[in-house]
Length: 509
Image 1 (tube, one colour):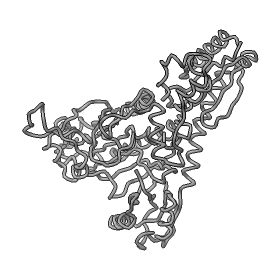
Image 2 (cartoon, one colour):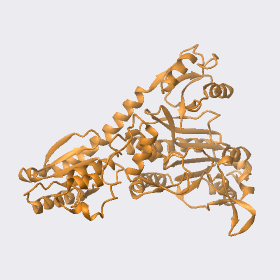
Image 3 (cartoon, rainbow, N blue to C red):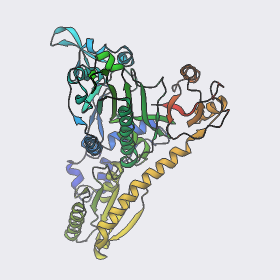
């Protein structure tokens, strides 16, 4: 790790470059195209995003991670407040009676629920669950707060942690026992209002992925088998990891219908004095988003962060060769940092004397900083700086008088280039098939498969059973809202029955 030798007195002795490099070796041991799992585990630790904790499946989120999370959180929080959604906070603990009110819902989460059974040395009379999600925590109080049409819509969101305990292969950000998320819970008088909000929230999730994290996603609807337990229907944004050939559910926006309203007696009286049940939604995205970003953009040098979310967008590094005017170089670095900071960019300078410029280059590449600026004697003499992009290693000399303008333009270009590159790689993995044999061939090639489907639950169950293997069964990812034309007479790839829609399939996280 970069910080291991920061206080090593031997590393400060100017003439021992070989010793310094030996003691502070940077770089990854695994290749992304070689052992993806080990590469991913290494890059999130070496890039200082997480640290492993002594409880399996739990991770320390370091400041490098929290800064990215806060940037995305700030965007989303501002947008939902425009929609008149208010933030609140409900307790972490759930009573068994409340948790079990909605049978289908709790059956979907039962294996993952963690329970508190003791207080000190005493057994609790009634065990207390730790929330895996908050529908059953919140809705008894919606029933209390909603009486008439003037109490609607009720639109609440909370930023919190949840715990989902039961799984065998924890992966930082992707599958963890505790994670951060937001969960929105809203209630309306009509289904039309609920339907409209589902799509409005889903569009915000698309923006998080595509416009902030530079990750392409597909917006679509989940199958009945894959929808949220107890809900009416589920929409999602689906990403894809080309290196593993797996889809990944990026975020979900559910219409719960009136099922929870029935169970929790969330009723209201309309303008005519008639009794009715509310229509409800729930929606959420989590720190999983950050894992998807790392998987999509990271390379063999480490993290590659999109400028919009990077904690540090530009790192300025002095390059004082022997006999150079070090004081003048440091002054130029300070001026560059000030100019870029005043322009609203997130900029830092690395003035540590115990590390060589080359070591610093590797360190900040490992952490994924989008742009590096180097200032040495030649740059000082020519009144310029050298800028090096993290995404493609391109180098360009920038006149100091055009520094802010050109750096801002380069960051915008990096953001767009990362998205374009990720989309090109994702699109190259999409395979359209029409038959079962074509489907199995594409699945073996780790493709994201688009196939015509009859939309029947037993067919999907049978497909899962037929594809089950050591690396997991295939399943439906989503039916995209942007549906290709379905020619008359098209049959389902799996059953041979008349097809009703195009659906994405594949293995997934």
